Amino acid sequence: MAARIYLLGVQGRFEIEKMPVTTLVTTHSIDRLLTDSAAGATAMATGYKTRNGMVGMSRDSVVFKTVLEAAMERGKSSGLIATSSITHATPACFASHVPSRSQHSEIARQLIHQQVDVILGGGRQYFLPQEMSGSKRSDSLNLLKMASGLGYEVVNDKKQLERITSNKILGLFALGELKQGTLQPTLCEMTRKALEVLGKDPDGFFLMVEGSQIDWAGHDNDFPALVREMAAFDSAVAVGLEFAQNNKNTLILVTADHETGGLLITGGDVDGKNIKVDWHYTSHTGQMVPLFAAGSGAQSFSGIIDNTDIAKILANLLGLQNFPKVINPD
Ligand SMILES: [Zn+2]
Image (cartoon, rainbow, N blue to C red):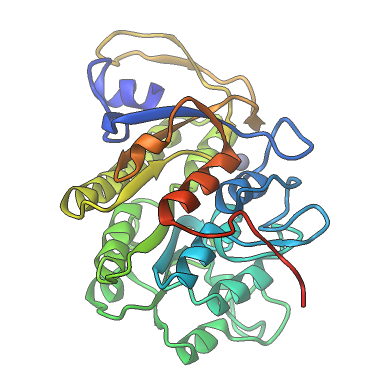
């Protein structure tokens, strides 16, 4: 809200804020009031609470099926987009299962083998074999080669991404996180390409897009960075909303793993000039986060819900049987 007032004044609205349905979401993890992104995203992706740091698994390392995986089993396409490394906790929780979010190399391997159709973001360092410069792997697996073998077109810059017509894309545009104002594609451009590709599947698709660095601005208590990241994220949501306008059977959800930084508006003018803000924390807080919904099924979200309800409601709307689901080891 503070970012929007700064940019647009009190009368203005982000595209996100024009979405017709708004609810509030509780975000605690299984044993902590303050969640991290791994437990938060696991809850949203699987319908189960877990311990902070754990990705798509219970605290006893039992694997939970994700809504993305269940949608793929029903013949839908899938995509993950982030401006952090694509192996970062939030995207990881939708298509990989590891006891610790720090296992980037293994998450990278699982994302490829899960055959997520469109993977766009940063984190190339976890896909390169240790022999190659820039690699952060501790083995000789070349996941870029492996991905090609699995049918992916691998791209690493914006021009290649623009030109590509493949239905299966691995686009890694930096060794680590992406940076605004560079030759890398923006969140908006990545979202547009993903919708162009995934929108061709007559069975539909599940796409998760993360404005990963909004959280980092909160950790840094950096208001200008927050404004920049929120504006970039809002542009990406606008692309999604436009797609939903033209493809009526589409649901768009916008929410967060957790609040970060405890930002308060403490002064300023109604046109947004001279806005004063005060940060209260440099980590995640236990505040509820908003969820905005638009399109087909949006009315299923109402009142105060828990982050695990997001996966459950989605599964219901998708007609998924037997979800949430624990995957028993065989
Ligand atoms: Zn964080």
